[in-house]
Image (cartoon, rainbow, N blue to C red; front, side, top):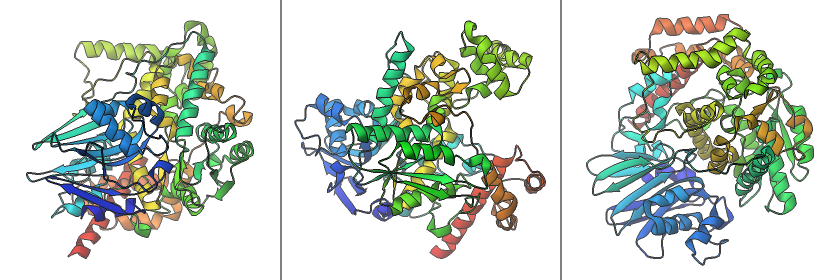
Length: 595
C-alpha cells in the first residue's frame, strides 16, 4: 500500500526492501547523472545500513574528500554519500550535507531508524506512529493509503487556515496523528521510542569578515555561482523560469556563465509568462533582454493574461488534494512548468526565495532605518519616505521609539510575547542587523514553509523537480552575516546581488526598481471570471455545515470584497475559505466513492 502511495513520484519504477522490523520503499526519479540506473533502497558496504533517499547533495566534492572513499565521484550516488557520511559521523552527519534532501535510514546494528530533512525543508517527510508501527513517507497521501481508517480532520489547523494563520503547517498536517517533520529536523526511532531534534539554525555557522565591500561582493559571486552550478546537474535539459525580475534573471545569467566557462555541461531553456492586458504583472522587456544575454538558451514566451485566480483549482484534471491548497493561482506556476516539461525538462530552476534571503522591500519597513549609519541618514531617509508613504515624524517614531517602547514593556512584563512553537527547540542566532533578523524571520516563518509544501505537490503532479538556488544553505548563511549597507543602498534593494551581477546581467535589468504584482489576475478571477464558482462553493457550504466559521461574517466579507474595486484586508481569509471548502468537498466525494 505504501508503494502505491508514492508511485507517482517514481517514473523509473519502485523497489522495496525489508528485514526484520524495518521495510523501505523507494520511487525512482533519476534527475542527476549519478542516479541513472541507481536502485534504492541502497545498502552500505558494511551491510548494516540501508537508505531510501529523495536527495540532491550539492557539496559532493567536499564530502568525498573528507570521507576518503576512494570512489569515482562521477559514479558515487547521493544516497551512497549519505550512507558513508552516517557511517563516519553518525547522526551529526546531517549537518555536513548541503543540498535538498529527505531520507530514511535503517541501522540494523543499532536497530534504529534515522530520518532527516534539509534545513530549508525543500524535500518532505511525514510520519504517523501508533502502538504497532511507525510510518514515515514523503507525502500525506502515502500514509493515508496504509492506514486502515482515515484519521479525523485536524480542525485546529483547518480553523487557522480559514483565518489565514499557517503556523501549524510547519509540523502538523490536516489529519490528527499524521505529523510533518519540520525543516532542519532529524528523527530517530529506537525500541518504540521516537524523538526529534533540530540540528541546524541559519546564521549560526561562522562566516568570513572582510574589510572591503568588494571582497564581500566577490565572495557572494563565488557562492551564488556555485549554488546555480550545482543545480544545473541534470540528466536532460534544465528549464529556468524567468519573470524578468532581478532574482530569476540573475539565475539565468549565472547559468549562462557556467555554460560559457565550461563549469557546467548540458543545456538549459528559458520560460517566461508575458502579459499584454495585465500591466501590473508585465515584465516582457526585461525577460527579452535576459534571453538575448543567454544566447545558448532557447527562450519561450507564454501569453498568460488568462492565468487568473481559480482558473485551475481544486481537484481539476486529477490534481491531488490530500490537504487543502494554499493558493488560488497555481495556473501561473503550471503554465511555464508544463511548457518546460513538454520540452523534456524534468528539472526547473526558479528565483523563489530571493525576496526572503536578500530582503525584498526594506524601504517599506521603517525598522530598517536603524541599520543605516548616521552619516548616511540624509541619503537614505528620502527613499524610506517615498516607499513607506508615512510622514517624517512617524518614520522616526516607528524606527526608533516604537521598538524602545516594546522593549520596556517586555521587561516590565506588560507586553505578551508571541509564544514559540513547541518544535522550535533552538533559539535563533544572534544577528547584527535588523535586515538580517527580518530575513531570518521570513525564511523560517510557517507561511513560507507552507508555500514550499505546495511546490512539492505540483512537482509530483507534473513530474518535475524544483530547484531554488537562493535557498542554498551556504547562500543563506553568508547573506545573514552581510553588513546591512550591502543589502540596500541609495534606493536600491538587493544591492549585493546587483553588484555581483554587474557585467553579467543586462544593465536595464540590473538597475530596475519597479516591482510587479499579480493582484489584478487574482481579482480578475474572483470578481469576474470565476465568480459563479465562488458562489457555488458558498451554496450549501461544508465549512458552514461543520461549524468551522461564522456564516454571517463570511457572507458579509464576500459582499464587501465584491463591492470594492481594490482588494480588502480580508482577501486572504476569503482565499482560505475557498481552499478549505474545495478540500472538504473533495474528501466527501472520495468517501462516497470508497463506500
